[in-house]
Image 1 (cartoon, rainbow, N blue to C red):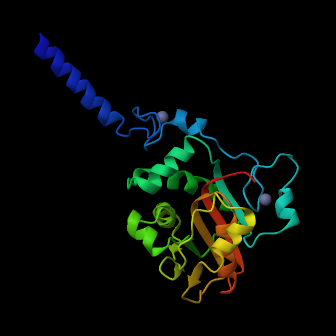
Image 2 (image 1 turned 180 degrees about the vertical axis):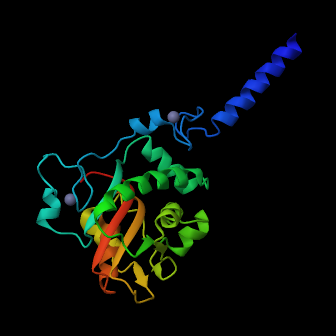
Image 3 (image 1 turned 90 degrees about the vertical axis):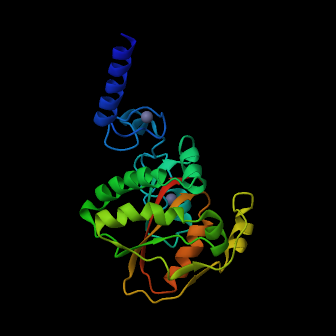
Length: 242
Ligand SMILES: [Zn+2]
Ligand SMILES: [Zn+2]
């Protein structure tokens, strides 16, 4: 009798695994979708609604298109797609993406970004290439991979837009930006990037996992602009508010 019960139990487990092969990376239960994120957890994520079209920060007034900060001092990029407020569980997912060498996080977050990108570009031209924001070689060696490049891979594959990776480098290993004042951040990141090619396009997308202060993205985009890139779209998973 026990043997039959055990047999039924294992058969049910196998059937469940076959019907729902994915496990949600947030609740750890079998996912009801064909990926590693269940529909309940997806809905509960801290989505940015009504973003500033230039920097991606959530706007407070419904009729505005740009936030006060972008109106006052324009940024060197044209538009931003930022999915989430930088709060849990996104903070935890991005930490795992960066430090756990487990590419399931890049796959799930990259797929969510891809869905938004497809909707966003229904009526406008896609960029000609995707540039993952470069890591300094020391950081890359330590981590073993660039998380922004891993996010870019499924997007590039699905959209048929190439990734431009090797020609952009971070030549100065900067200290973490978050503990610095705005002025120190600018100084810290100044001339941190080098670009070893002339692009044969003038419209690119820069991809980053999270934008905590805009100073790194601003410096990188300013460097791109010196290489005749006229239009820059920014794609990121999460963004802190101003
Ligand atoms: Zn879940
Ligand atoms: Zn803005």
